[in-house]
Image (tube, rainbow, N blue to C red; front, side, top):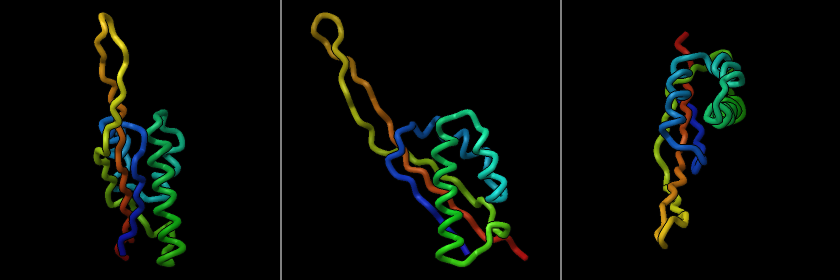
Length: 112
């Protein structure tokens, strides 16, 4: 059984988030959840929140136990980019790109 949770429009670039996502792939769900609590990056906080949502979905919607789950995959895709402008010298403008990302966590039940 596969369980997923999606966090859309996260205000962090996908490039920064993928480093954290790679570190928990293949781990037990509970172990990954505890590891992310001590990871010193903003992306870890966002991915931990999404992982917690996936665990809750598994328990409440599919009656699965947390001990039987592992992280099958964490996908971080680029979302839309907000464009803002900063005034520069001589009447020109510099673009500021505020990047977003879509984070998807997939949990699966271990083989018995």
